Length: 43
Image (cartoon, rainbow, N blue to C red):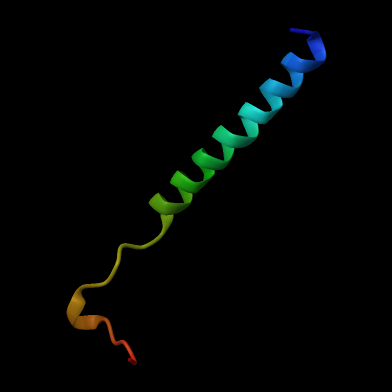
């Protein structure tokens, strides 16, 4: 593999795994879902 291919592979891996890490952090920071008695849905 050429140097440019390796650099592109590393950048792509960082984007994918970085997005996954940010999504997990965002899910952990969000408040927990409220209990079913407090959920009001208009159906």
